[in-house]
Length: 332
Ligand SMILES: O=C(O)CCC(=O)C(=O)O
Ligand SMILES: [Fe+2]
Image (cartoon, rainbow, N blue to C red):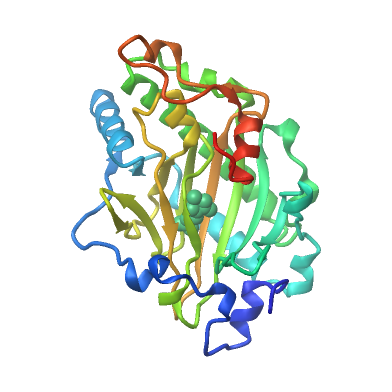
């Protein structure tokens, strides 16, 4: 077994065959579950009249749980710099990255990580990642942020400000799409205490990508997730019984509806099931920002959205409890 090794190190070793712990059972393999052709995820330009954006976003969130946002006001230059500092970090020698190793089984989620096998049946994902909190300032611990490259912090803080602006805008638009007042969703997610977490996903070239997965099918437990990938495609969405590949769209924000918005909207908006596939030649990277409530926030269907004919479809509990149950695969 080669558990304990980073995927980047494995890929660099020039394996011809995929080690057994990465080989998916038949029904999960990309070669047996290919994405359909001719279906594309919704693209929403924020430069349209507000009522049009509200309508398009509500439709996309209800039918897909996913949309690509364009004309969001984050400069292509800032996205390029964000990707540059992340790429430079992952190009550092392994030992330098290991100084940031996380330890999720002991509750230490921030830092450099790779999902290791827990038992013989569990398959490992073809991915290394870096994870840290970006907001609010009171929850940020810079000790977990890469010190190298030296511009990492400045660039990431600038991106944090911009993503915060866009996520607040998206939450307002989604609120209006539910005929609620603009601040309704943000208010229910902790207001200005709303948390943003950065996860840099790094998928090295894989010797047998048709047998492996980068990230297993899952829904995000966040409220929303805003992701920018590099130019290597790999994200797939589950829609109407098929996987749909999301094409690369430069500078677009790949926006996922997560579990907390699905719950607050009482199921009107869908938390999108998604996975990522890997690639033989190219390294894929993606920068996912999870926008989530503080742990003590009570999350349940909004009272304005439930009545006798629309009973609550989800129970109400703290985000901390939801997260604990999801991590431990307990029923919600
Ligand atoms: O890399 C991607 O496009 C998807 C990553 C993802 O789903 C996640 O980090 O939750
Ligand atoms: Fe995800």
